[in-house]
Length: 452
Image (cartoon, rainbow, N blue to C red; front, side, top):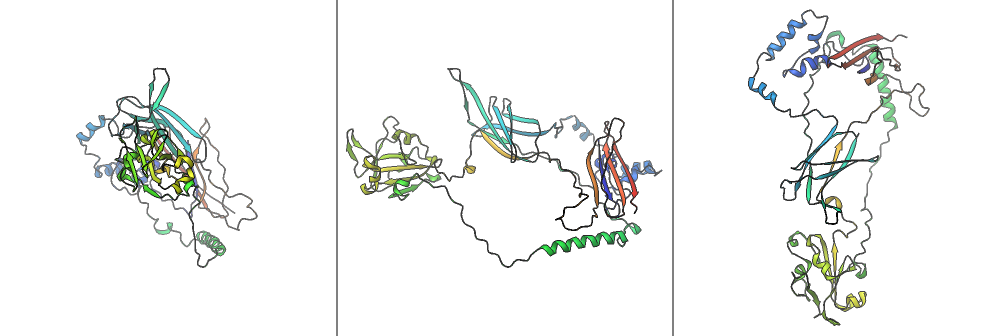
């Protein structure tokens, strides 16, 4: 396998001894200092290359070894060889304590333009996990869920999501910066060459054509409006205009239930009974209450506009309550009929709000992330032989004529490529680089002249 680049040798300068795959793998990547013209030490036509290479490594500190650093080579490598894309993380308890049992994992990889891919696995006994060898392209969304499988007495399994999941951020080693390539000297800098002047004139012509199609607009005022919200019908009976109302914020999350929260916070509203008695829950009295078939009766409890048993309200976590509305007078609660004779308490929950932003909700046992996969395969663009009738007139003076990152040879080691030339008469440079099966770098260059 090789990579091939075909360029216009007039527009793309190629210095003779610049860094290439051979000099990088065998020299530059092993030394810390700046190396000028690294290809000079691997030039087969240079009879002194071996001697100069030895002197270079001596001046770069190659002769000095630190035995303490060599001893560390027996340790496990920090960055292991990956057979594909990798995602790692851990499962831990909500109090940030490690788990002590194996967790079942389900991971969904969702392309923004394609179908999902599902992976399953399990953690170790400490909750750590790694998904290896995955293969996906472009940007994907990842949803990971951890659960524990337990068996009931009936033999059926249930899922208990009581732990949290963390996806580790991938640590990528910083690549070594390539050597700065200088400009050619002397007559190699062909700024006033006739061919370069022709290329520049063609590019200037295209730039003028592009700018000629642009229109300069005057002042533009952009006005926006809020997007249409979903109608909230939880308080439609009283037109979302209660007599008394209370927004539940974080400072009230310490209360055990809604009855304890309401007590003493609304005028004319009294909570009678033990607020911690789940067998006989308390009652909410307005105007002294109402006498019914079972004696003194309190206000009717609603959750998101639906009548519920008082026990449901007793078990509703305060942190899940968004707002509490109260209708105290008869003329306002009459819309509920006989159910509103003793007053109405409507508990609006966060989950019942149709316009809630669920992205701000932390869900235990789940983790989401956006990951970058492999770059999709793109074909190098080559202008068609017959341009489209609607395309602008342009002269083809491409600096890169052809590029193929993966060129496969036949069993005899030969490959065939075909590419269209430009409209000029340049010197064409073909550069080939690759690595053999034994890990040895291979490079070759060939130049030919395009005639009339």
